[in-house]
Image (cartoon, rainbow, N blue to C red; front, side):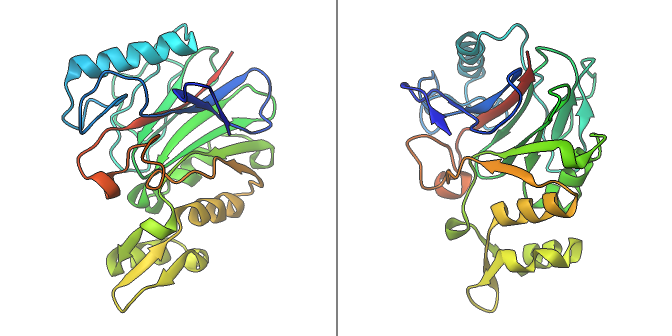
Length: 247
């Protein structure tokens, strides 16, 4: 991942076609006050809406975007929707498009942001993958909107690492009920707790779906408090945005 000098935007480091633009924002250089400081991009966390609007406008200006991203109302579910035409109902945890300059975006603060594109550079998608969404099939649902899985490139954005992601028996059981192939993604801490590697879970499910061109930022949002928000670390906090679009 390439960090710009001001660290306001981090470009995805992957061999996507040249007409594909992708990356993630950071918490740096915005208008929000604590505990959302500085560049919170979500209206749903209690931040001042005017500050969020200013943060979003600054990001659009920085990236020289022709159109505003299609901001979703994320529900920790398995729904992904087309934004070739702006939908009336934006309740979903992923979006995809074949249109130029139509920006797919998800916001996160621990969960896994995942970007997809085909090798032709004609279709892109962004997915928000928390444990609930993963267990509702959000990853496979995103893969299914592409015609040929073997041609898909995937970039996994910054998210919480296994060192800081402890889960209980209910979440552990939900993952294994969804797919027993995920068993290697957990390390038992005691009778009721496990550490969970979301990065490994995402990669296993992608490979199970026929995708092998998988890349990632390698950044843990919990550890990089200077760059990212983390709900597990801070409780009430902001959200960064991970985006992809065709030029």
